[in-house]
Image (cartoon, rainbow, N blue to C red; front, side, top):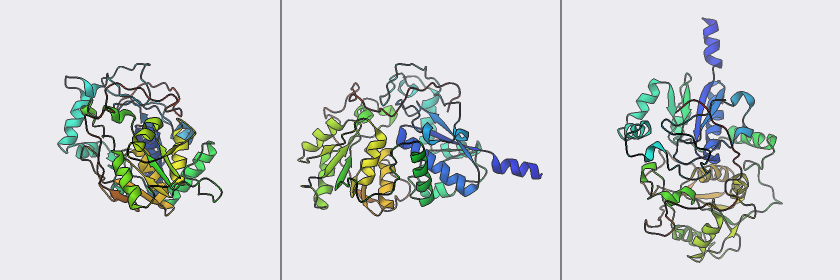
Length: 352
């Protein structure tokens, strides 16, 4: 009996990650938080295809050897193709097929609000971007899954800083120094696969924020004429042009395509303005922890909202570029050098 209890207490739970590097980082942060709370270690398994956009694992250097699951998750019904391009919609994805697929069935189950009890039966606890659900993860859980909550827990942030520094990656969790660049404003402008919002409605991709929304915030804060406004984006040239169309003069990060460097710049800002994005949620959680100001939208173009409060963040009502705007397209090319932090990975076995 004693032996069984020890085995239960030390058995690892699985952290299921999907999406880009920021989403993966939030998953790791939630795993660390839960591990500390329930006293059990964890392992991370990444699903690079499940969102409908291809994102390989990017946080492997932040994981301990014992936290890395050698079996990477595949998506049922998807034939793996080496031609998949990081950050772009997978046109062969099962969600885009005309016939009923396993992935489409999962969508139906979610819409019928049946997902949560079914997952609970197999020992999986989705966080659903909810602080209360993060705090209530059962001690006997087998799996946790997203959307992960951007926790501001100081012990988690300190541990993440140690991991970044150990991996020799520029750490967005590093305490701010008085001698470094501190921009008045950093605007995160997420574009990328959001271009396919209307071409691929099955994937549930959010729309692109109208730059007018960013302009209104700058005017409220009295910073519209600042000479220290930066924009970071998966498509910085396009983002800069969009901002210029409403009179915002923004500089771009001189380091191109490195999300870690973009995150670092975002977390140095006195004012951070965000679209709906995992990158933004991660950066905003760091900014507000250091008592600086961040704006985050109240909802997505699809009507999605955060289930709980996002502590310390100012909320704004976003406007979105209309579906007839030229930026939306089912075919688009990312800027050269985009997503440079992703290395080619081999994925085998298992499914989500």
